[in-house]
Length: 294
Image (cartoon, rainbow, N blue to C red; front, side):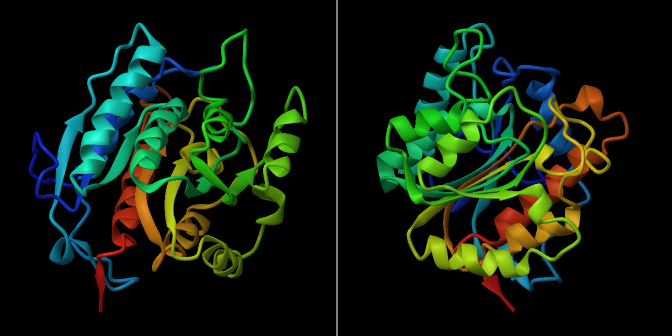
């Protein structure tokens, strides 16, 4: 990622990029297992400073690429176990993981590892979908259920959970009711149309406070005109500039981890979705707590 050195261990690192090439939890178009590889390819032109925000991530942090988690593509539950174990080691070393997905199932075991160190965390979740369904086809673990599983295991500080960009048709309104009943703040895509999200993020910063929080960004939160390479696209989504406002709005917060999920290269023939994902991951790196700003 970003031409960084590859390192086998998180020891001595402040932050690291980690790939999780898993799409066994997808419900529509597969291919997110190839996301980490393609995002890395599109990251080669990213430079070392962020002139727009003044962030100097590589002058502030020791950063490397830890490669990919060794998942089990034939067993989703076993993959979640492997992901949790890998992230427990990363977090225990004091390293902040920035994850290249992979479908959204992977956020569940990552948050299991986060909660073991930090306790229940706040969550900024950008997505077209709630991902708080209970089950599909009898299965309770797939990319539409991670945050319900997290609530059940008390991994989230529900009063500090914000979901932005929600939209699209649904078979039931139950996930919407569930999120709101847990105390989540749900910001529909319609509430974001044709406006800056800087004021919204000022409110989010107040809500998150200084406690640990996690950023989970599903690329389908963006409109498919900008990010077509994803498994479950929904029309009338967020714009790239709004995505930047959301991530940059996290500067000053106690961000303990981030992920960018659901990039599916087979549906991204020109690489634009992966390019956007790589840039958003760079922006996430730039808002980590120890990054100096000039």
